Length: 291
Length: 291
Figure 1: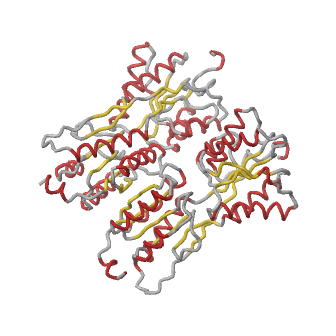
Figure 2: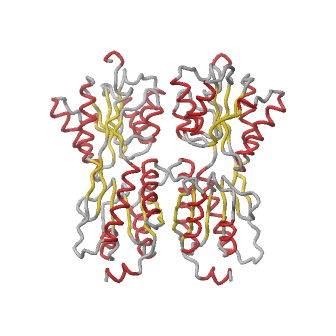
Figure 3: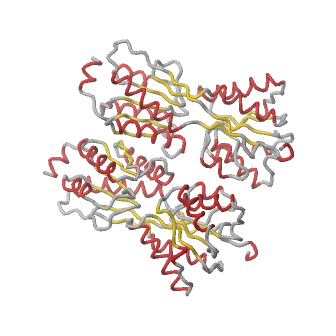
């Protein structure tokens, strides 16, 4: 069955991302397209708009279009995975990246979110910050949990207290969510002296809101993000962040699909590739008097 | 012939852009996908990487995949259009956006580049700048010529001299090109007091380079861009620019394809839709002492 489907496979690879406009996902798509093109494939890109319903519709449409393989990062709403299992049952290679469902036996391209969050939190502690807030993403998304765990582990190892009231946010992952999170901190009697945000757009949104409110960064409040977006380098002072290799993530995801397509092994075992990240220590956390 | 193809058409719309990662194009794609999804279509996205060869390969692959329609913005290298004419001959509706080939009789979604460039140049003149440089894009691209013409017309109408030596740049359209352009200006004995760049990435690249070189913006040199990228709002001072409605451009392009697909008129005449832009006057051109 899988074999017969393989024979009539198309030259297209399907890609489902939460938002094409999000720089991280746009860059991953570019990486996928880069490898796919060289191998003679074209890609079909769909976005879930962060909704499960649309992700399911997209998944079915791509399977019906007989894509040769499917690469995806789940939406923030995705807590059931029947649509992904259905694709796998049809013999279509599935590769997940970034936001992955760990329990599904598919190819995966990830970073070590726990370790990266541990590293950037340790950096904030090294800078002397003592009340470190966590501007959180949606619960139930594996990478968000891993980032939170890394943050907690660093606090614990360095003997820095965890203040539950400083662990807040909308759960969203856009600039607007960072602005709202900043307002939550601004309303606190005893605000944090540093904040780790779930990603760069959230950190940049908080940054802009704090600046509007007249706070000096990092003197009044330090900020750190996650992803290494172009925006992170443009704000002044620039944002301390974790550089995620988005283009490489896309290239690797495409390579995993091709590997699975070209495998003649009946018992092909999908791989998980963990890509390296880099801590970018910048002005939003480095206090001038310390230099 | 066209009719028989119409009957067997797929539910996919092809999209070719120079670079998926470029925020402007990523946003247009998002707009296309938004309308296409609601009409029951999925989209196939390819990028030309700014090369004619790859654009031709993509165009042929999409036509071979029997896309229902094709939406595209040409690469910087594209000076022959046989591949586009071939698509039209096959009865596949073609809609161009942003970088369009005026002489091809297709649907088009554009802005009034001449008028927008005239407006932003007039703004620089109103601010008191007298030596206004033009950090140019590739020649032969219609919209680049229109932007240059708008700039020239404003200089002429206001009696401000045009200095050919201040009309420079690599012809590229990325941040890196802006950095190189800034170096060209920095090497001049008599540099400009303001610069209009072909787009926001080029303006932002020049901005960063000037800042590194210790210039104060806008006091030492003013800058203006074109497109309204998120980066333009984040630099400090923020960039004066023309806000292009990228998402709406994508939605309109998809709507034009659907209109053509649903038309039963044998003599369907493709439309050109010109979307409104907005001049964003911001700190990179507004001198504080003038406020």
